[in-house]
Length: 321
Ligand code: FRU
Image (cartoon, rainbow, N blue to C red; front, side, top):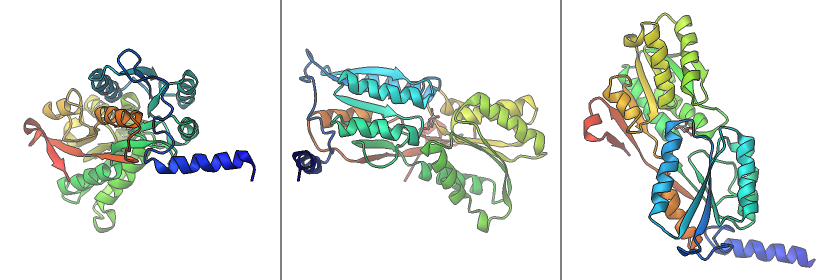
């Protein structure tokens, strides 16, 4: 057996001993003191959406509690290629830990794995990458959120009605999961009166949702409900329906429930329901601190959700178990 292979085996064994995997903080380049803080590279897939601005703000606020942490923020401006370069730059720069909220699973899997295999802990937030070559994934259960939305919609429509689905980016895991969960919750097999009459991909963006909804309105004389994979999508659909004088004809359901966005829409009577999608910013910093200290961290942290409707909005929504 060559020394190289033997070294490889030792590396695997060492990795196997720490729950955080190879990226357990053992390679930290800084002392982790206020004078020489740990450096965290944070790659955000875009800052064009309020939810992502909130995620960065949550990371910033949580990190500000710890003078031994310094976070470098990068905005990939919705390009997976740019985001890949950002991860590679963080590695070259010698950061102590990386937090990434990836745009898409497939193109970001390799750069994340490469950083992790070099001993840099990598925390993946919200959208997933493939495989297990990262330290911790933190996010809500999007299949569950989709299923809850589907169930709420089936019950609210009394098992009868026409539905428009406006999907997020389907190369990202929340788009796939919010769709499959939704179908489970609708139970179309046993509720033949429910029909998805239009399905469009709005890639999480309000202007795209508005355009897709214009097509849905043009091709459907009656729409009972719009399910959008996020609140900007639901709001874009509402704008299109209102412009066509048809907003009162239908209900609107979204996901995210930011206090300043989706929850406001519910208060204003624009959305009938929205489901909380927590950013995980605080949890990312909690895990980062543990990993940097060489401690054991979980491979996956699943965040909870809440349902907001006009009935419960003033009392903080309803927890979903
Ligand atoms: C923001 C966003 C959120 C959505 C999440 C899914 O980019 O579209 O609205 O809940 O990403 O990853």
